[in-house]
Image (cartoon, rainbow, N blue to C red; front, top):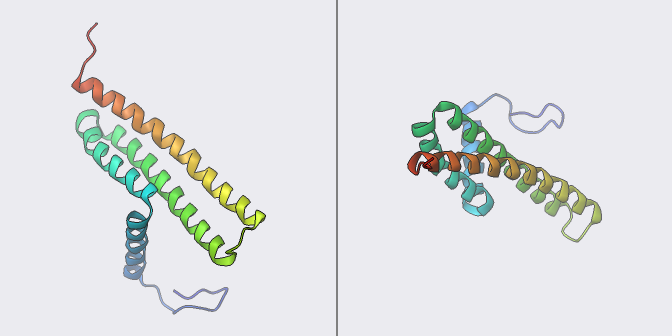
Length: 132
């Protein structure tokens, strides 16, 4: 798509190309960024159980938390790549930018861990009820 501000790119809107770009970026992140991979795998294991045993609300909560943490990881990876591209040597300003991006991931991971832990606790109570 043509960038109106920079005057670069091709004119016209190509939604299939945009979808292909999304899957290409996600594929790259899953293959080369373990922090994205393990979160997606763990969530993919819990999502069907959450839906099957607890209902659609739990499914959606796990899905939203997983989406937020993966988005934060993707943004963090992109910011780090841009920073490394711009400045290969140590730069204190770039370090601060990377630290802020990492903090965003940390906050989203904290939420994701809480949601996944609570969902696992609830699922385990379905399989192993606590006797009164």
